[in-house]
Length: 147
Image (cartoon, rainbow, N blue to C red):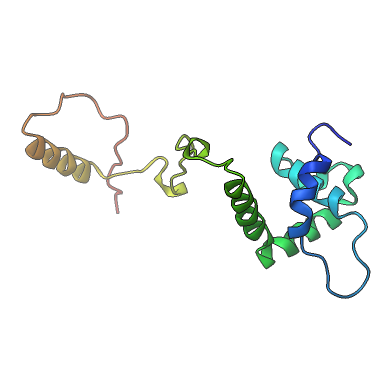
């Protein structure tokens, strides 16, 4: 068992909620594949970098893809939260909202504005705030294209 793989106690909580096929042979390595999925997301690596101890990367990815499409991870989270609540092991201190990573649209980086438009925006801001903006040289001004 690798360092961050699921312990037997953790797997005992998760296993009943992991979907397996109703017909055909049961997957032999579901626990290893689940650990492979966790490894991939914990490290941020690509699927092709999943260690071979978890099985072929394509199998681990296929298992993740099938489970994700079936909504298995959401059902698993709901079940684990309900289990923790029934044991009295859940509270608001576990809730975390992280806003350090907020992605803007790719077109919002380096907006180019015509000089007249920028002047109008600065004038509107000055009128709204009631105080003139400090005069400084613009860093980026787009010149009118000559015909």
